[in-house]
Image (cartoon, rainbow, N blue to C red; front, side):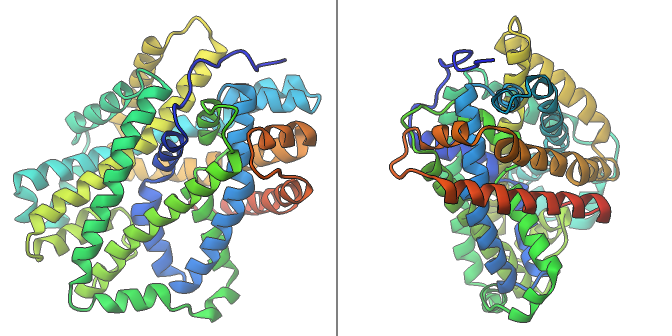
Length: 443
């Protein structure tokens, strides 16, 4: 089935609009607490070395392949898998397999919206100043352990994000041109402030002094690989739809390179805020969600101008979260409109509102949210990422994939690029999937 002309009117207007949208999708909780926690728990500088290696490999082949298959199909997840498997002579299978990674995007969006509603609550209480006087443990438990505790914030997050999708690629591009520069600026301001704290230098030493013996531990490499996969949003779904909105004269590999660079910078800036601050105040960097809602607010309460910096912190995290949620909603909504052509954008967005809020409102306590996100992270997302990798490099015709990769490219890719994808990227995705499934690890 030729899907080249199924879409084509919805496009990013500039290369940097596309890159910022992709960075927005990639930047999120994986950067804000995931990267600092994993860096802190897996050898500091040694983990960073392994992480940068994987970021380079996965962006070069995995991320660029997802952009390419989306642009070739001119549609998102479901249509892209159909296109790839049709290229490989198996169109019937292609109509089915794309629904699993798409389900992963929807499921993670449902849970993600809940945690962003926690962040929005933190932002509101930073603005009012009430966050500066509470016991942070009690404050966090007051809504994280209670049923239906953040309904107004949750509704604002879901509705507000969906409103930013009303014009498709155009509104995604415009909102990320605002949110992403502000995200980086705000975290940079925080990083400069944290650098002035007594004891912060010990955090920098930990981050940038590799303990090379840690690299003998296979799990350091596994954790770095998982962080790289999910930080870049190479999940066999999300980045495909942004590729579908990319014009034919853009260099895909170049775009993937810049996405990776800015995603790495985002992770590093977040770590430069969190790890030195934790060292300065002698608190645990591996606190997961508690890091953002207990540890950091406690630090900010004891810091001069702490209220101002709390507002900056939660503003930046809201921007990072909403930009990621945009991608999750868009990839699901676009595929629904592809499969059901009579479904228009506004009714589609209303449907997503009903699904996301209707299910998510019942998992606002963290003891429900946590298992849901573990289920998605351990099973659905790793399987979807592996399915995507296999589809692009083992099912789709080599020449079809390379033709799309090289369309608009300044430097043509050939056997080296393809073989790295087929014989390195796909095995890495498979290993990560098997580790997640059999060890029950949520990356």
